[in-house]
Structure formats: C-alpha cells, structure tokens
Amino acid sequence: MNNTTPIIKNTICAGRKYVPIVDGCRVHFNFQTWKLQGNQRILLDDNRKMGKKTPMILVLGHKFMLRVWEDIVKMMSVGEIAGFKVTQELVFNYPFVSKKLRDNGNDVKDRHSCTMKLHTEGLGYHDLDEYMSNPCDLEFIIEMLKVEQPHEFEKEMWQYPTEELLDLVPRLKEKGNKLYAQKLYDKAEKAYYEAISICEKLQNSERKCDPEWISLNQIKLPILLNYVQCQLIKGEYYSVIVHCNTILEHDKDNEKALYRRGKAHIGAWNPSAAEEDFQRLKAINPSLSAVADKELENLKLLVKQKEEQERNALRKLFDNSKTS
Image 1 (cartoon, rainbow, N blue to C red):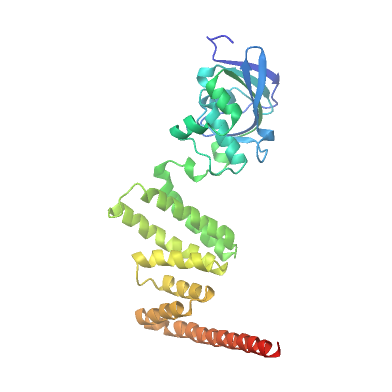
Image 2 (tube, helix red, strand yellow):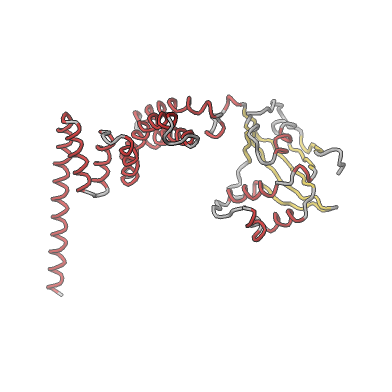
C-alpha cells in the first residue's frame, strides 16, 4: 500500500442516495475487517457473525476509539458498498475496538484490559493478540445501510453536552407523569430513571456539601418518589424500601416516602416496620390519620390471617404426626 495515501477507497457497489454525513449524524453499517499481510487477506471480524449480528451504529463527533471509521463513512452514500485499505498507523487501536464489540456481542462482562493483564493474559482473543504482536494494514469492507440526521433520532444521554442535561430532567419527568397517567408504568419508570440518572451524573461532579449538589438532590428526590410509586405498583417491594430510605435520609418527614415504604414493608412482610411507618405518618401529619388508620387496620387483619394460617399449618403437622 502507498505510504503517502493512508486511506485508499475502492467502490464495490455504487450507492443509491447521497446524504450529507456530518458530526452529530447517526450511521448504520455492516462491516468486515481484513488483515493485509503480504499477499494474504485474513478475515478478523464480520459484524453479521458477531454476537447478536446487528449492524454497527456510530454517532459521529463523539471521539469514537477508531477515528478512521468516522472519516471512512463520510466518504460514502446510502446503499454503497466499498473497501477501504488503511495504513496500520491509523488502526493501531483496532484490537481494543474489536474486543469491545466482541465482548458486547457475547455479553461478556468479566474481561478487562488493564496494562498488567494485557502483558499476562492478552486481550482474550488469539487473533487480536496476534495482531497486537504483528500489526499490519487493514481493509474495511463497509456497507452503508442508513444515515440519520441529528434531528431525526432521539439522543441517548451520553450524547448530550453537560449544559443540556439539566434541561432534559423536567422534560423526562413530565414524560414519566404522562405515561403514568396512561398506566404505562414500565415506560414511566424508565423515564423517571433516566431523569434520576442525569441528576446523579451531575452530582458526581460536585461535593456532597456544595450548594450545587444539594440543589440537584432537591430536583432528584421528587422524581425518585415517582419512580418508587411505579415500583410499588409492580410489587418490587425491596427496591421501594431502599429508595424510600434514601429519600428519608435527606427528608426525614417526607410523608409520601413514609407511606410508600410502609406499603412496601407490608408487601415484603415486615409488619412491625410497616406499623412504625404508619404511626409516624400520623404523628407528622394528623390530617392523614384516617389514611394511616386504614392501613393499620388492614395490617392487623393480615397479621391475624397470617397467624391463623400458621396455626392451621402446625395443627396439620401435628395431626399428621399422630396418624403416622
């Protein structure tokens, strides 16, 4: 390959439509990766044979590990198939990209590539270790399937600049509220979770005692309460208890958190803890006594039923032992 030309394109099949591809676009493509060793072409990867066999999806302008792929796809049109021979200097980190794609496709979660482990165990794939030891030029065969402009798809959280993330929180909360009103609890829970994740991501940049952290926490806690309500409806009692504990750490008299934790304690069958929460709710806000008393009466009934079931089980066990 000509050292003065780092990328050489060879069109295999012309495209059917030209779409401007710029930073912010999302491209979908199939790819094959071939090692070029002397006169040999050796297949390294084919996304149609990797893991879930889905196309590669790349959002441009977000510092993808293999920058040359961004340059390559910008040379293509939709429906085009082309080969790109690339000098080894531009693909020195391809083994790490390939490893990540292979691991993700195979749901591998326990392979690491820290420096020490690379020296002792390699990347976990023999052909990639071989390439690391003997680097060479690569050829990528790319089939461009689809190009989406930035306004044509919903961004994932990591694609937003930090300054835009906070603006997204109230929109996600409102989205969750509308879905909850439609009784689409799974979707509502997801929207609330995304809003909470943004708050926590931004909090990670602040100290816990800083006004910015406290302000973010005040935004997050009401959304967490909504998230908890979705989980309570779905019967995820232990998770509800954990999240309500978090809310009550910061707001010890939060009535909704006490009520929902009390309900979750009943579901997880912690009757004494449930009674404690409802009694505290009455003490904090006497106007909620009727609501708390109704739950306490229900709890008494459930305890009585539980005791009766246990007595019947013991009686049956005793009767069986007598007959045997």
